[in-house]
Length: 107
Image (cartoon, rainbow, N blue to C red; front, side):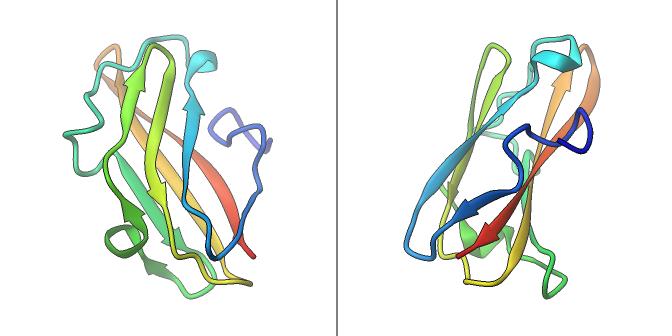
């Protein structure tokens, strides 16, 4: 883990035919997320770091959810082998907007 913002398991690996919802743990940021991430359009972003492109609208499917300290992303789908991605989750904790991220390698 490079920082408190990067998930401990990062970098993650995901196959091109897999559909995975990732879980972000905000425990170490000392507060419960209060944002309803399923209705907040900017709660998640998926960025193609290899080609410098925002792929949120094409590679995230469905909605996310929040349960205590844990935020679950929408499904990440259709990744390209050999491409590196950054999945970011934003939440509100005690009126502060905070973010965490995971690096994902397409395989």
